[in-house]
Image 1: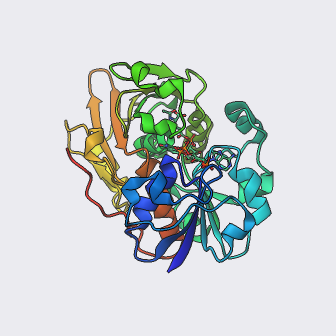
Image 2: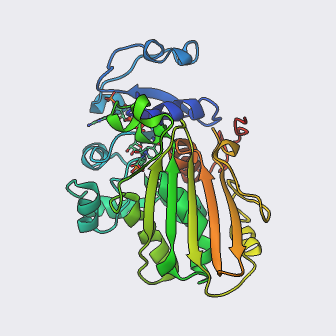
Length: 342
Ligand SMILES: NC(=O)C1=CN([C@@H]2O[C@H](COP(=O)(O)OP(=O)(O)OC[C@H]3O[C@@H](n4cnc5c(N)ncnc54)[C@H](OP(=O)(O)O)[C@@H]3O)[C@@H](O)[C@H]2O)C=CC1
Ligand SMILES: CC(=O)N[C@@H](CCC(=O)OP(=O)(O)O)C(=O)O
């Protein structure tokens, strides 16, 4: 059994890791780390874990990471980039759920995250953990930069079309919608019940930090610089992300065949038949990304709907999928649960 430590274990990403690791045959949660709840019994903070997790939160210090094989950072941007250089030990695997190591260009990181950039050699040593595009690199990695939630749904929805030059990249519009757990557990006006319930709000117009991440990977697929338009919306539900993506087709092809072919060896991507668009509930609690497509012959517009659970494929499930690959385990280990429907 490999032993995992979760830094930021009081947050939603950390809690989701605890839930998923509990069902894993090869790795277990050894230490859950929190600055605010050090010493407290985990089930006292989270009664849903009563009789399941019988340990206390550890503080954030080097000793807490002794005899640990895999360290997950379920912490805000700005944390992992500063801690990893201090603690990095050969043979230990590090998975960062934040955006710290996702952006290749330091100036871009500074602009979009409003933080000083990570050390360049650290950033370059991290592999972007999107298994559907980078499986072989992930198998060799020691540090994983786990993708953002909107970025996961958007890149998977666009990758087949971009790599085959089916669409005009200048026409890409990504309309993203997320449930409130995407903002984490910290309290804020953004997710205040009375301002979220029966409401929908567009946020981070022209300023969403997943924009450069999506552009970076579409650019790699295309071989030339791609800019996209991304507008995110907060909607009154707990989990789930839907990216509805629009683009102009420049080369007509059977998009269903193309998507099925592109993802045929990817266990967590499911392509819907013609006319069948996925709903967030159909992936709730699971590591699936479900994709539906419509091509309008009159307008030459393709519409792609890509849904994930932000906490699973959008964060902790994808992190575990990466750990499975890094250790040569079955890619789906611990991730085979059926979505919770309804
Ligand atoms: N929620 C989501 O759907 C997704 C989240 N992510 C990313 O995953 C990461 C975790 O997100 P999420 O769990 O939602 O966030 P939360 O706000 O729910 O939790 C973050 C946790 O990090 C800890 N923390 C905060 N500041 C620091 C610090 N300076 N040093 C060490 N620990 C700190 C806190 O624990 P404590 O104070 O107890 O130490 C807290 O429990 C973030 O980077 C987020 O952007 C990525 C994709 C999707
Ligand atoms: C509702 C809400 O605020 N969602 C967050 C989701 C991003 C996230 O969780 O973090 P990363 O940037 O590390 O991927 C947002 O849109 O910024």
